[in-house]
Image (cartoon, rainbow, N blue to C red; front, side, top):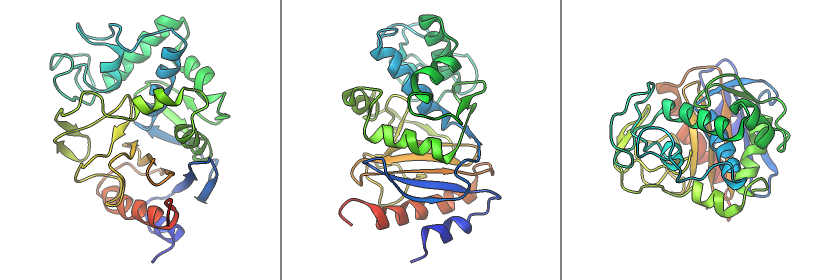
Length: 274
């Protein structure tokens, strides 16, 4: 079997960087420039969601308070069920009826939290999540849906937090990484219609989606996000592992081809019980 390093070196990208993080927070594997800052695209969303969950635990917002279109709540915005369109503030469906992946929804969420806390959302994210985790090279330079910039080193810290939460009650993270509004159909960007198209609160849930950007051996409980800038972060609780990969080539057929076998190789080498 090819080594993980050789698999990454064969990716058709100028600059790849990746890390595998065990459930205890130790880095089991790292490759590439760990301190290089990459645009995250939609891998920004899990960071934004984590800040929203801190705001919830601090009492600044409630998950079921009104936010976004009429009838929508913070929970709907996080779970892509507010009914807002993909990239515009236009209502496409009643809240809770369809899984409409929405950048606009995360922008509304950021504005809602900024008003509730009286802190710009980028500053709130920094104070609530990035600084406590030591993610000094990470910033939000615009939309909470897609304008984060980070490094593999920093995202490895976040991957460790997701597996053993310190900033949030583990029960909150468990709720955020379980299916919210089960059974809803929807489009997974880059992968087409999925039935069901399951999500948690800011995290996509693997379940039985096919095709998918994780591996064929990934657990149905695996969760995470990928970005159109050629980036991904997944956590597989059954394997006791997380993986981060950042590149400087936009997502496309190349990623759909190389990411799943890479994930399967990570799981084969490091998963709990192997």
